Image (cartoon, rainbow, N blue to C red; front, side):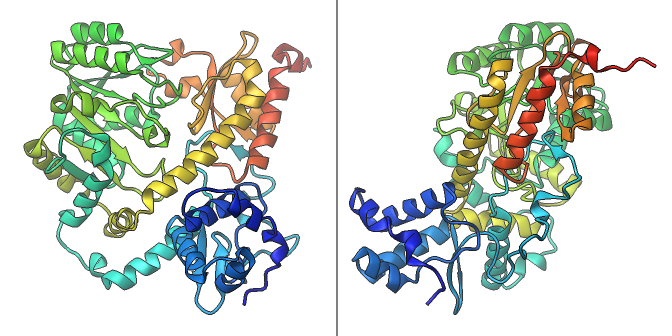
Length: 474
C-alpha cells in the first residue's frame, strides 16, 4: 500500500455523496479539484484502490475505473509495484528541500512574459510516459519509416479530432505539417508565390514577416479594431493592392486577443467572395475557447484553408499542425509542397498526436490548459484591469495600452531592468512607426501563478511611475 495519509481524503466520502452521476467520474472530479486547489501536489501518492474503496464505502472496481479514467486524462500516473501518483514529479525524483526548482529557472533569470506558450502543468512528464507506451505498442515502426508521406492513420486521427467543428465531411481534406511554420511556408508558396502580395492583419505574429521575407512576398497590412480584422479595411486593401490571399487569426488574435463575432466573420467572407480572396485561417488559440465562434473554414469551406497547430494548445514541443483544405485536390497539391519543404511531420510527434487522439486524451489535455489559462488571466486582469488591459478569459496573453507618459519600447526596457520581459507593440506591427503604444503580456509560459503574480506586481508598480522622474541628470 502506498505511503499516503488518509487525512487528505477525509472529506471525500461526504463530497462523493453530494455529487450526482457516475461515482467513478465524481472521483475524477475530486482529484481535479484537489489538484487545482493545491491539496494534492505533483508526485504525491493517492490511496490504494482498496483503501479508497473502503474509505468511500464503494465497490473496488469503481475506484479502479476512476483511476483508469484519471490516468487517461493525464491527472495521475500509475507505477508498477508502487501505486498511483498525481502526475508530475515522479516518486524518488522530488528535489531535496532547498534545492533549486529547474522548472522555475535560475532565480537571477528574468521572468519571461514575452512568449505565448501554454502552461506546462506536468504535461511534459505525461507526454514522456505516453511516448514510452507508444514505442512499445508500435515497435518503433514510425522511427524506421523512410517514405516522405504522412501515414493515413495520422491524417485520419486529425480528421476525427477536427470533424466536430465542421458541418461538411472532412474526408480527403486534411493534411499534416511539421508545425504551423511549415504549413504557412507551403501555403504562402502555393497561394501567393515569390513576388506576390499577401494581406495580413496590421498587427500580427512576427514570424509571418520573417516567412514573407524569405519567400519574397510583400505583406499588405489590414487594419484592426476591437473585434479583429476590419471588413472595410480588407475591401480597401484588396482593391488597392490586387492581393488575392489573406492570412488572419480570427480567434484570440495575436497580439490583441480580439475575437471576431459571427457577423464579423460573415462580413469578411462576403468581401473575400466579392474580391476573389483565398482565406488562410490560423486557429492557433481558438481551441482554448470553451465555446468558439464558427470557423471561417466551416462558414466558407470552398475558399478557406484552416490551420490547427498543437504547440499553443498542448506543448510547444508538439510540432504538429493539421490543415483543412477546400477539397481533396487542394489537399494533394498542398501535400506536394509540404513534402518538398519538410518531407513529412516528425514521425514520433505525428504518432504521439494520433496516440493522444485515439486514447481520447487530447481534448482533456486542452481542457486542462484552458482551465489554467483562465486562472492566469483572472490573476492578470485583477492587477491590470485598472490600467486598461484587455484580453479574453481563456487566452494565453493580454494586451495593455500604455498611458501617454510611457513609450512602449522604453517601458519594456525599464521592465527588463526589473527582471520581467514583455513584448512591445512595435514587434508585431507591419509599420512600427504607427504601432499602438501598448505591450503584450503572455501569462502561460511562466512556471507558476506565484511567479506570474510577482511579475504582474512589478508591472503595476512601474506603470504608476512617471518615466521623466526616473531619469538621472549628470
